[in-house]
Image (tube, rainbow over all chains, first blue to last red; front, side):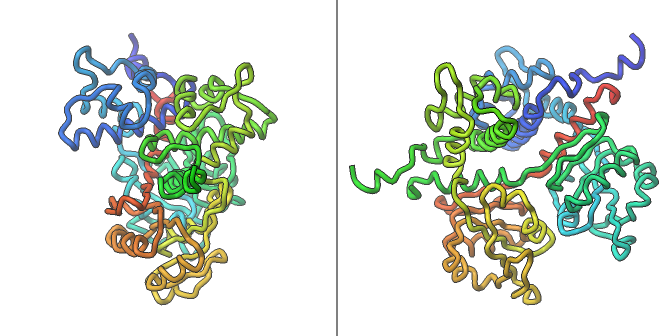
Length: 223
Length: 223
């Protein structure tokens, strides 16, 4: 076996796993972390499924994309499955992340606590407004978009969050691709055209509000 | 049969449906809307499941919480299922929504386009900073939090988004409860203590970044 083969992780390539399965991994991870927090050492597909409203078969099918994690007569060892899922998600390491667009959304994201807890670390912000360049937000320096390639290379940035208006998003995405960014989280309300070697995730915050309206309209006292 | 019974919708009460099932309804809705956009009149549990990485049994089980939607030999009629899911989610109507906290996050949310597309309409914003009171952001007037009850009643507001720092979130939530708000979408990194008759949804944006890191680490060229 040569070196390059030994370095390959025991996970399939992206194209074979539906994106919805990946987002469920995050849900399993949160539930497992909560179970450990509550003192549980083991769990199983039925318990995990019940917590999330999945069938036990769905849980097993989702995890089977990535390997064999259960033990006969035991189920899953929580800490072990947490470590495995983090490795699969890539959050077993720290990711240097850039934010492009220092409007309200960009600033809000720099202040958002949840990213850091899961291994994402902001290391640079970018804008084109000269009044903002050189400013420091939450300890993060704001650079001009013209310096993108240089800063991305110097800081080893691989992921970027696009928080600019829709009209500017494609041009920013093109600049990010040219700078060597590998993945883009897009908050702009447009579908970005990106080359195949750059990953993308779009954010749809309305889903959260839909869950809330569901909860309200389905109360017994709200016919 | 008395009046109150006739007014009850043909959906179960919230407590019997796992929250994860509800968030999947939003995913089904987006896929159905896309299918209609592409000219499809019908679909089925296998196609919907394939698009989202679910088994067809999972799709049928999820929808079965809310009724019978399929036709033998046809499957689901897309427009009919869209209307049914919107009714279940409560987005077959327009919801007047308030934002509390006019910091960067609150302002960014007022500008976010995705809410309006799904039937959520901002009608008021609240803050305690007297410099912001009376200001208009994206056409929405900013009121003092002291006027919450009055404005909520006058504008018929039922849902609120909490976009204040964690240290202020519980006090804001208490004020929202006192004002008669029925559901709270919480972006603050704290768990809110709320009475049972008020619904809540917390937002975890790190899940989106986890999907992105997964996509990047699982590329064939990124061992």
